Amino acid sequence: MLDQIAAGFSHPARSPLLHSPGELGLDFEEVTFPSHDGVPLEGWFIPAPGSDKLIIANHPMGFTRAGLPTHLEPWHSAWAASGNGFEVNFIPDYRILHDAGYHVLAYDLRNHGLSGAGNGGISSSGIFEARDVVGALTYARSRPDTSGTAIGLFSRCLGGSSTFAAMTQFPGSFEGVRCLVAAQPVTARTIMGRRLEMLGVAGRLDDLEHRIIRGTGIGFARRSPQEWARNVRVPTFLYQVRDDVLTHPDDVQAMFDNIPTAEKKLHWIEETTARWDGYLEFQRRPEPMLDWFATHLATD
Image (cartoon, rainbow, N blue to C red):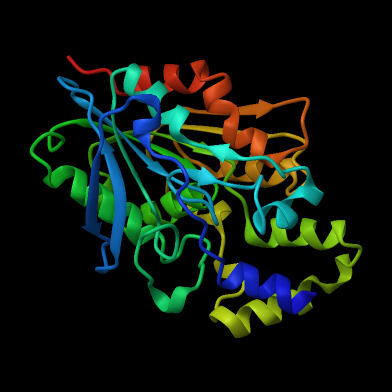
């Protein structure tokens, strides 16, 4: 069992893109651009004609820019025990952002969706994926229709951790980025520990880590969004399911506390234990996040 969990964490299986922006009547362009280290990334650019504001979306681990088909096998069996056996479809999020007046760039991180493989196909909890965040920013600045836009980041889970890591490794790349909305960034040791607790083998976390190190060369200590959060310098809105069975509230609380900027907010989602409800929060109740974007992306 530990071998299976470590393998899934170290080399996550790709999930398919079962949706596209066209389903909700959005015009979009299929785009490709390189990560900071050259890995080819695949994405969608959804224009909002006449807008001078852009949102770049970074997705969770195991997901794609379209979401995750957790209502289907094999993803359903992997997640249903934790109460997350239902689909997450991100297309409604892009519709909301578009209708609010934003261009949207959504793409697949390396080793996810249709993007290229990098670093032997391993997941690094943001260490290498940070280069993808920088690649998306570079691409946005290279397009004639977005080169002068005010930029906001919408980063979930791995996308959030990768954004924190990118701000640590490449701080100069965030010059001009106005704000960040981050949903449910999580520390690897915390989420893997919770999974083992649910399986009744909480005492085997060190054994699991040894297997992950053998598969990736990267232990839990190096996968530290709590520490990377100390390098976040933009106004940041974090939100999290408080009773998420896959983590502990003090994990996100520590990240929030470590963010040095005064302009920050932590929003808790109540009355659910399903992590996926956190990923669907924006399309259900988008007002707090839209208010954050509107406040910090306001242009003259």
